[in-house]
Length: 138
Image 1: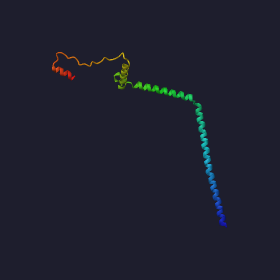
Image 2: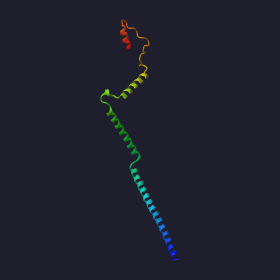
Image 3: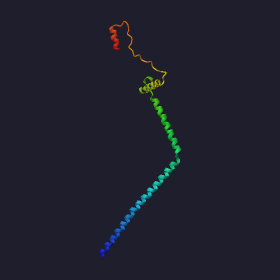
Image 4: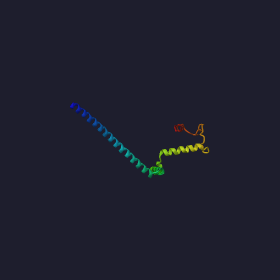
């Protein structure tokens, strides 16, 4: 009988211990949740304070100013990259200019080239056979 009472008391103490350990886990989790919520509120307040100092118009003006500075920097960089000697001009630039000139000529009917004659060239008088052969080779 004493043994049964002791076992019963041990069971009660074990149940109380489990209950206390469960409560401790819950309290620890709740404290962590409370800290998380407090941190999130502080972060929101900090973001709100930053946003109050910066409105969308200021951001748009800043972005426009940055774009303008980048364009100026590109212009300076491109200007510095140009060759000093005009004979060293880039082949691509020259080709583009040539193509543009050709397009201008095609579009302007007043600037046309003469027709190429299709008949044979007249014979040159007093030409020796050797000179004739040389002319053919040319």
